[in-house]
Length: 133
Ligand SMILES: [Zn+2]
Image (tube, rainbow, N blue to C red):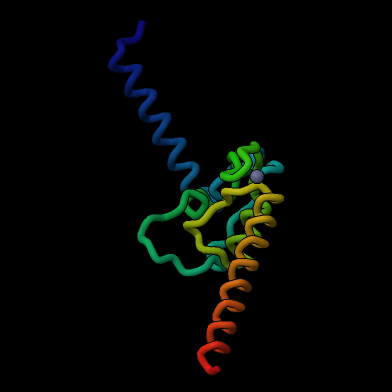
């Protein structure tokens, strides 16, 4: 019969061994968790960070699928690990940003913004034209 204290020490040393094993491992994950839904992060390709906080995917070294609710229509959607890699490493999106809208709403929002910009520019042109009359 082991004492509680002994048991605690055993647990602690097992945890320390595990941590040491993970740290000495060249990749942050054992191979068996390399599954769809996980994509490695190449931190050298990321846009420069402004804040001092390290986003979870950098600390972890990989992206995971993120489930979220669309800000506009409320539909449940998934921002996949592959999409995140594209956004941060190819589009060089700010690492503090993340998906908030589903795809249809994102397209609508982009359309709305470009229309607002167009209308603003048209308004400016009209104003300039009347100023010169
Ligand atoms: Zn939506």
